[in-house]
Amino acid sequence: MFVDRVEVFLKAGKGGDGAVTFRREKYVPKGGPSGGKGGNGGSVIFVGEEGLTTLLDFRYMRHIEAQDGVNGSSKDMYGKDGENRYIKVPIGTTIIDTETNTVIGDITKHAQEVIVAQGGKGGRGNAAFATARFRTPDFAEKGERGEERKVILDLKVLADVGLVGFPSVGKSTLISVVSAAKPKIAEYHFTTLSPNLGVVGVPDGRSFIMADLPGLIEGAHMGAGLGIQFLKHIERTRVIVHIIDMSGSEGRKPWEDYEVINKELESYNLNLLKRPQIVVGNKMDLPKSQENLKTFKEKLGIEVIPISAI
Image (cartoon, rainbow, N blue to C red; front, side):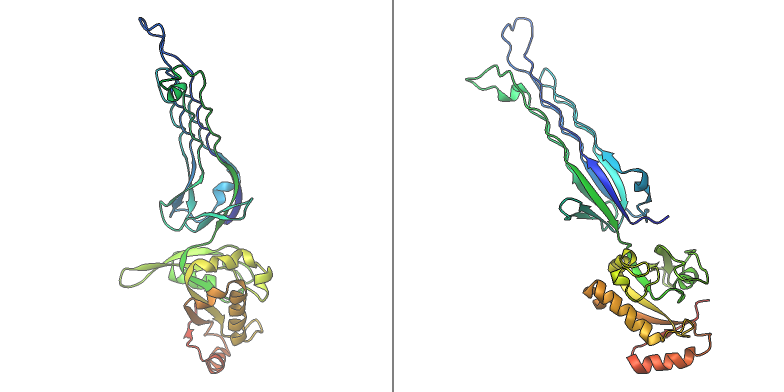
């Protein structure tokens, strides 16, 4: 199951309290303060992991806590720091504070770390407050509370190439042919309910990641069809590839399909039209495809790569 948006509660560790103790050594009847500092609380830290592609794990991990710091003790001994809690997330995850709706961090590369909830500082023990004039302080600091916050994790798929187009134009078939991806393929609309990623190799040994994105329809930017929940994944693709059913088998005109999809991209995010685009005319083995391809080029003046993905 593909999960790309979850809400999680985070609680960093509390700092340990400082200690109030005095030296009790033989032959030192009036020993000075010896209370040590409390340990710092652990932080909640998100880490980018290139092997993850979904936020599915968070369906059962909605409350995450780091460890508290240990209290200070006698003989100026510091308390142990609480352990940080490291949480792996897919590359492409944005972390948003639910209260302020601000972005806390954006995970864009493997092993990148973002501290999302900071652990509290440990309190100072009474030894830290001793002065020449005040030699026996009988107080210490409490440890600070760790940060608590609710965050939204929002995943946008990272891919070099994103396939866009109406439902049933052959996007899933194409990615299954050029990569090892095995998306669900069937003769009905919206078969693809989540992005499918595939690694495409080229003859010189290099490779790139291709994403088969769920089909778009007119009004997608306002929520029609699968709507905004998958339009967002196009934002992180480097190149947009339009897959056009050049046969017009669904009763639509291929050139109008291209214009509608670009209009939806523009309405969602104006900057998407600045992204490099490639147009692929699919289903060229079907009747009317050659005729429609000629009309497409005449009307739009755009280069088209004709293919038959089957």
